[in-house]
Image 1 (tube, helix red, strand yellow):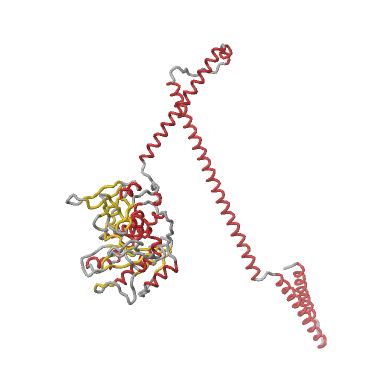
Image 2: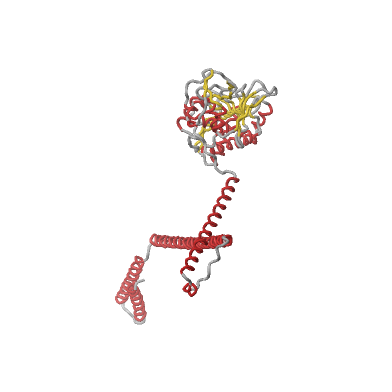
Length: 508
């Protein structure tokens, strides 16, 4: 409370006290009625004046006190200042830590450089001593002796100069020889170390390949193909010792061809070619379309076309009014959606963007599925299906891709002449199908029924590399039980993921 207000308040209190004393004193003297009224009026007036003065002083004091909002604002300001100081203190501590770390790194680098220099000096000294010792007629350098040098004759000075030059040349020669030996050892060590990077692939356009045409189909010479990929060529023979096909191979790659059937084996995976191998005038040939769209993508280390792999569209086959294949209570549409959702979950955990053509028991038409692919422009399209046959025996995994122009379906003979959107990615379709087939076989232990070509609407009209996977046969009693099992579905998903990893390596 301000001093002036306090003084006013005390004065009012003193007035009340004095009035009370006066009143007490007066009460001892007999008063008339008029005096009593005057006395009473005086007392009331004095009390009111004192109360008014005290109230005014208290009101003025209250006006000077901060409000609750002002106190809260001040407290908030202090908290902000405290937080700012804490942040500055933390930044300062971090700066100190970084400074200490840089000083330690600089000291370590300086110590390493010093140690390297000392080691280099020791090596050069050892080499020099070895060189001087092997120089034969070159004597060791004499100690500096100004007197002896002063007393030397011009002829002796010249001789010493020549000896020093010879000694220097011997040392230089020995050092060069040691460096050459070190470089040779390093080269030998590098040659014995397995390569960590892939060899450089040749451009197909620069390859020299002999070509022929047979029944309107162009073929390339298989021996020439082997040469351009650094592979060894050999014929394969049947039990009657007759040529039945051919094989090209090296330590890591191998492709087997049949002169009778379309199916072959590339790096351990069954692959259906568009045409069987041709033997013409005792020379081996494969169709040019097989070479460009099927074999080359599987033999080369990296794709010549860089494509993305961030967004993947998953198509669960059938659905809604279309149950797909049925075996008792087992319906294809149920299992394709289950596997698709499991795959979606795993891909999203890995950071991929996933688009589903259906997430429930609905039936998007084939045209609608292709339209979704065109609309969202994914990097890959994977359609999940289950196989079926009237024969209960077949079992195993198949992976389909679009038929290239100039080729035929695996189970057909009609040559495709019209180009589809998927044919822009024939090479990538082939590698994607191969990698997914390979991954699923390893994960499930299923039967390899190969990568195939078929005119399927969703894969043929995809706007990105696309495959359709037949994960197994519902018509096979043993396999349908596996497909219905969550554990086996997880294996299927693991196989597809492994295939995508392999395909990703092909892209990088």
